[in-house]
Length: 346
Image (cartoon, rainbow, N blue to C red):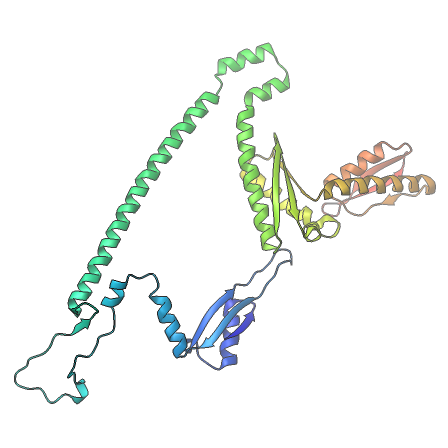
């Protein structure tokens, strides 16, 4: 027994066969783990296989595995033929006699001798009966599923009819209150929005969980939502790998989650990812740094160019600078290299 690795399962197998100097037909191959490409360079793993030459022990073990779960009566019917007393092999038989008589092959079991043809017929009948039972079970399951789908569609149509508002009622409400908030509330019922965002939150959380799993990181995600905003809180022992340098990995995850959400649901929905309150800590650090930059510009009179930031971080900088007298800020460049410049107020 030997372990071999490779970029793919096939490469690992070829390496093992060359090392053992045997062909594939004479090797017992077991795949330990498949290769993982990882995500953004993280979690990449090589394929690993276990290879050994086929010997009597391997054949015996394979035979034992092959008969597991098969009824004893079937195993007895498929047992090897036992030579009856006085049996002579074809090579040692005398030349054909005129009698032309022949004996019927039998399969010896613990109870009685069963003709080979009869044993084969019994096995065929058993298989056909099993297939018929399986087909009946599948037909019954399909009919049950169709009934459930029909009931579900009827329930959904009824619920949709109950939630719909008649045009006359909408006109009456607009006449009573022409405010924008009332119009939005009438056009987009809270119950419908809540139902959509709950489904969206579940799917985007599953999507992010799969990405983190491919990064070979164990994590759990707690989700919450407020009307059109979805918040995903990631809990893991490897927060640094999920956050990345200056939050770059976390920003990439959020971008993927946002695109996933927009492709399947309304673009009015938004999602925010957080790891161990990193977003709050990053915001506090950014505000403190912006205040120091403003003081430096006031003292020196020179403009200060910050490093490229995301749209949300630039908004934090602009909002902080707006509260400091004597300085102003503006953005330059194109995403993802767009940055903020802090200067003296004109």
